[in-house]
Length: 308
Image (cartoon, rainbow, N blue to C red; front, side):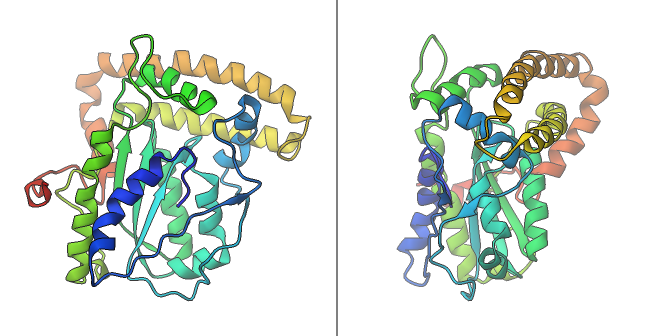
């Protein structure tokens, strides 16, 4: 697990708690570190300089792991953040590391995402990385910032660049709410019960009925456009020089201007057009929602089983 701000670590700990409390379960938590370490809060250009490698999933060097790859886990829980519409670089590095690949081969995996709100393309990349390891994705849990989409374009950068996430100017706090994080205990309880009956050995999800993921399909088009532009700009920036090189700075400045224009035009325009065309797009959006809510789904019929 890698948690830059600490939010994902809180989610992971809440999910892991029921497993740790179970006498029949042995739990190992691996904390990933990269060399050099990413700062938090981010200096502005240091954040932008991380963009090309993040978006194109070119991983940094990992600090030595405590794992050897010879461990035989029954289940792997893989929490990750979304950086530039891709899994965060430390997690990508682990999935491409020889130890990570050996460890995950043939194993059932539950991914856990905590992010602003755009995660669909990151999970598609994650699926490809897991498949290349020979792992089996059986569940996906997603937690997104409950604030309005346009508000999070202000609150999330403020948090990243200053470390301040509280409400201001009438805007909501950045990040997940305490209630959202507390409620993730239900997933740990569900995994505990699944392990007790060896349900993880099948290819079927074990967290259905617990409200694991609720897709907003209206963001799909914005994500697709963003992913394509990130590929083009990321490739240009990598061609200009390695991370930290001064040759990148002029291109990064141009990229910032492009990104701001895209955020204030493409996202609102996409949402407005989809609102106007909702009757026509409803079947297609429904298929997108169903596709990306798999395998765990948005149903909540089992929630009463795990209410505190």
